[in-house]
Length: 486
Image (cartoon, rainbow, N blue to C red; front, side):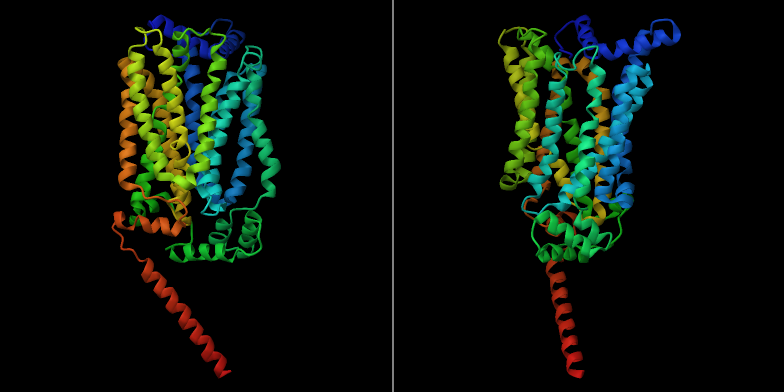
């Protein structure tokens, strides 16, 4: 990892250590093909493409979500998406054996597509199958398993397991295991009942799905809630991205999702990994010991995500997001100070590493998972696919921007580069404090109504309820007259 106080020569040495196995494979393949070593510029280009193409694949995957779920449904899209993971695992695991670095690059692109699809469709599915009382907690499982995946990756990457030159390609094979597990389990779970009822008009299928998920036969209240939401919608078909942008009553919901997703990537967590190993070396830890110490980062991530999932329905989405971004702004400020004085005091690296752990915990307490829950809650059924497409696009473009620009920013500003993330986190917290209403334990219709004032739309809830009541009374009176006539 890069550690800013070190001379440029040492920084380059540390950069090489991160990618040495794959770059060695690139060089060996080049020699086998062309009978000469690969040039420094060429290997750097290949490595850069290998790293960055994941985000490009994620963007492509996110852009296809609306079309996939319209054709295949939520469950069907998740099942089909496993094919991408299996193909990517094969390409990445067998690339070295085949002597093809192109297989690694293509594999990274395909697994990026898989991630782009799943990061949109899975939160959508979880939000639609969950009762509103536990919708946030179930939605947080998405973040918990992302953090758990990071931790498992750290464990499998230890030198005793797959962190060796002779074994690194086997690590890619583990990408197939979650896909195979999902292919074995997901076919036995129902489709989203909201999708079945509101988009497929399959009331019998929706009733069975609700009964399966809730474990009881009487689901009339849930069905009526979905019917009520359906009656309020102006359209029963899936809306396009352009229609969502034009929808005045969803303007601030859309702005909120764009802001939150931008802050999710631009808050600086990915940049933290540039510094972790360098800080530990400054603290005096040996190179052989550092991989085991960095396991604490994955452990903290997972623990914070679990705690967030346990308290989200008590505390709410809004406080967790505001606290998370505010705490990150504070710890980024402290980390900037600690890194600046790291060479002057022997104990300062310990404070820097503590700040990193607290940054990770702050991120996973809210900003790491709640944005995906929120995207599913802020939009009614017909606009939800377009909303996730926009959220996914912003997410992956921001991810690509951080990976592309941060090395240049870090080189220019050194330790003060983190002050940019302080501004992003603070701005995100202020925006959420001013604009975002609480969404916990509310129906999708109630959440939509809570944005009426800021969108400049009159609250028509009572008027709509009165019309429904009059319509019911009129229908009952018609039935009595017909019965009397007969």
